[in-house]
Image (cartoon, rainbow, N blue to C red):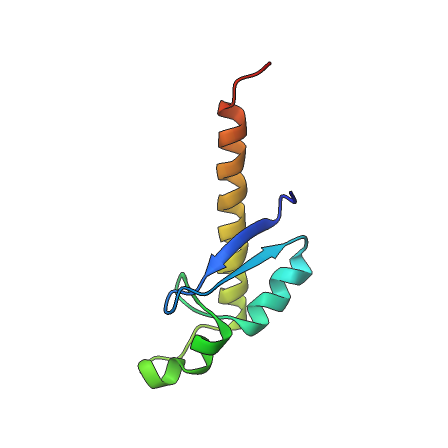
Length: 88
């Protein structure tokens, strides 16, 4: 498993997508997905954002940052679990 691996979930509909391997993949996903604050929205829900909300979505940089930090948190969680595992 790559250290850059996590599953992101749409805050509106619950759709998920796995993101892994590289910063360029995070960038590709961030170009398709949207965000507002720390919430992520899949491409379908991002496309209909304005029908449900009066405020504009956050920009690409915010979406990239949200995904990146979700991956960092997931990596840290994995490290904590592996550090708690019994040693043979």
